[in-house]
Image 1 (cartoon, rainbow, N blue to C red):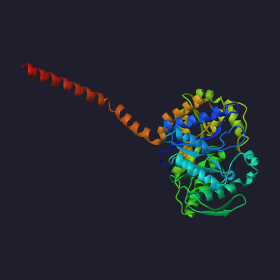
Image 2 (image 1 turned 135 degrees about the vertical axis):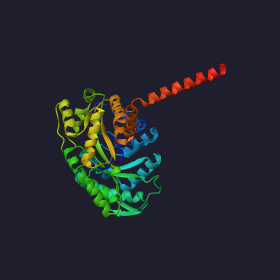
Image 3 (image 1 turned 180 degrees about the vertical axis):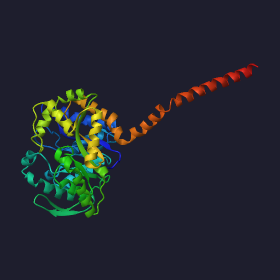
Length: 385
């Protein structure tokens, strides 16, 4: 298993209860990005949705432009842009602008779109979305690389299209994966990162090693290089000082939002009782509603299931209220991230050397103090004599 230090971030749809004011929720998500920047998280991803009432950010590029002005170091990703909803040339041009506004912190995450009503509202067939995503991703990749693209399909027509402004940086790209091989196929073909959004579901977890195998196989076929450090796995988490406190916090919105997702995500079922829901989340490894220690064990299980990955993205929703959500991120930064970054191991070595030295430091200090006292007394005695 890859022992590369693990980075942490968050992935937001974002999910909010309908009775939470939309304006307040959007600004709380911006505050979440600011807090993560302060706490040392590496990445913040936010998605695109247009229906359902729960996932309320319509344009992640606009949101991330605002977040870029409020943060200084955290990388900002579209998690994800629904490619079939957009002309690929116009979208690529907007990505370049965001890359400049963020001074190279922008990451391009692509997907087919998930909500059926999003597709219905603009008159497209959701069964065509994965094909269209592949077509669009190819065009956007070529445009970002500086190519001039002429291409006509059943849903866009490009005539010598090129980007008049070059990207600020080499934009990092990533594609989503759940259970189907579409995401891993594209990641390998283009040397992109992989965003495994169903990494802890039974089907998603079982597919992890096969998915990375597809990435490596397709990368080799197309002369691309891929790296597990660019493989991101998501996991629902809410952490508190005790499991009981985390459970109490999660009464705010966990049952409400998970039952909503049962209508959106295959394989999820509605549950009537929040405690039964939390029991299932914790016992099956789907996520963690508990303590930092439980989170550490969960991440280790995910490393084992995948064979090693580079970035853990906390799948964040309004499981708890805003202050408790911020506290959860603080505890992850304080007690979970150091276990996987390598920093705790080095500090632990120094601590163990000190406490297992039979008081060598204290004895040396005491001996030095006694020597200094004796020398001082000898000096004073010599002066007086």
